[in-house]
Length: 400
Image 1 (cartoon, rainbow, N blue to C red):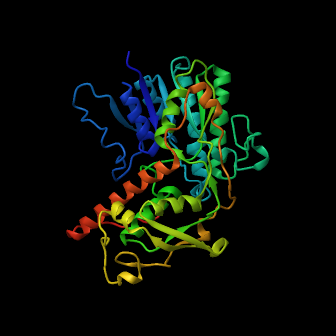
Image 2: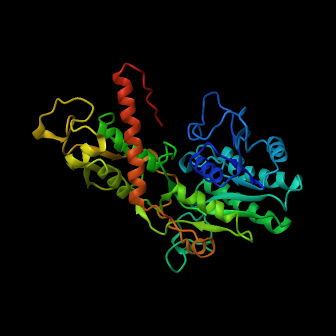
Image 3: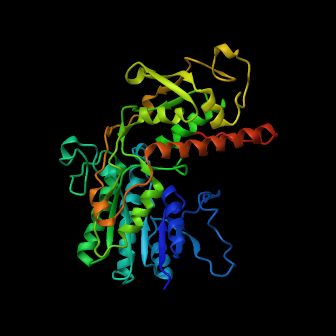
């Protein structure tokens, strides 16, 4: 019998990859999306089938995690075997600006899903996956395990409104599991990225800027704390873990991570290296800058498909770092204190031992491959924009 799944947050990075995975496995997938005056389904357009066709296995519903009656209606109509609650306001820095909204969506929104399933008498039928986060740990050194990592038993100490809201989601999921015998699980996912990552998240901000600087569209990348250490994996690997968590015999919570940590500065270095640009770093703190030291012209040409770039060619060959417009020793990365968090989390690294042992899960993507994929995607994106501009079409500049 065909399984039925609901995905909240389906228009996001994780939702789109999870939808692909479940459709490949033969599921009927229902996605909940918020109403918007502009199209917000670009990550899903390749999956959408005209609803007038026969045997349609993918359907979108208007809904919102702040609307209990809407959630109850959708769950009642679809009678899901599995619910993946991925919907959230997940930008940590922005959560300081919108703390009440974050609490309502990320915290109470989880309760609304659980309570809807309970009210409808689906406790024994519907399995629930709650998207939890490494921000629960807050980077507290004393809370790591004996490996120097955070695992399922590490104490929580959230340091942002986002983390605090998610900790409510974590505990209410656990409470409903114990109180009502529901198959409800938390996946404590560490940072996971992809070419579909939101444009304002730091990894995507870096790869977009590196591509634009290489193409002559942008001069400088501004970032916050370059010394922050994060455990970065690929979203494709992590949605597979979500699926596996709900296929177990008993409901449990799992940390999903790579167990490898990297500084933001090193991620920047790797991104620019993908287009043949090599940086050196000078200064400390807010005065630190990334300077274009040399260019591997062969790698630059291979990545961009054009030796002279796609912009002006006014500089002499002997003076340039990037053929065409950017001299060597140009400052292309700067620190902007605006991007510092009020309470900074310097280090997050997860211990995926339980997931490897019980789920048989392990990441297939290493960070180098992830960065390569993200850079190739963003270079192609902005080459398209330049081509459109050259043919007289308007290209809008999307700013943070």
